[in-house]
Length: 289
Image 1: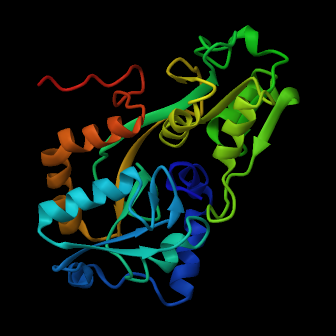
Image 2 (image 1 turned 135 degrees about the vertical axis):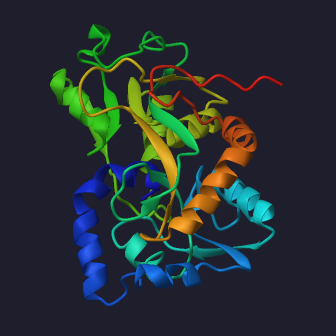
Image 3 (image 1 turned 90 degrees about the vertical axis):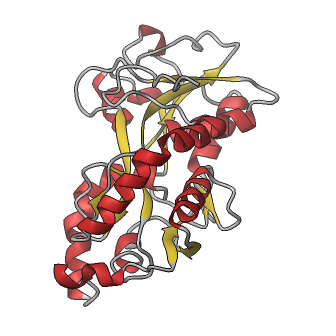
């Protein structure tokens, strides 16, 4: 399952996974030795091979393009280790020294050392553009009562739907899957376009690009959730994850993020990723040209 949603459950399983890694003997070496693990000839990335719009093994996702951007800036060859997102991903990739960076990590994750964030995004509502719910901006909107709603189970919007008493007519889609064989967000959007749902709630960087691709016959309206009150929050700052203790490598990546931010934003906007300000209160303004 992709990092954009797995991060919502990683805070619950992170300590367990790290413990398993240490028990298996693949925990990172002492801090003094960590810098020796980072390749100086390749930009080594671990990613999901079938997780569009984020990444795939044909280089067609926006994280693929961002990774290539970083590799070019470093003057290094881009090398991938492919592994499905889900339980054991970090333990069997980054902590096993099969790569040096994992793109797409939510800020504050305890299993990795986070770089500075390179974008902030939010969960979104997706509805048929010609429908009566196209202008809904909040899960507290009374028009959602009794309507058929789709949500990825276990994600933050599900808590808000429960608070507003909307679960009775909500369909849950799987959170942690192998995208090589299952695509819950694609299934949700297909249900929307086929009239089996009235509205869907999904992580914006996943849903918005896919909605744009699928809306040739049935136009879909995408609205970031910027007005939800109470926990959990609907926006997340997205970083790159490196091994704990690799502070010098983190600082090098932070410097690249600052320098490459305009190019990063351009890639994300081209894919249709909704970008919001760092506090999740409004859309991020485009840089003046």
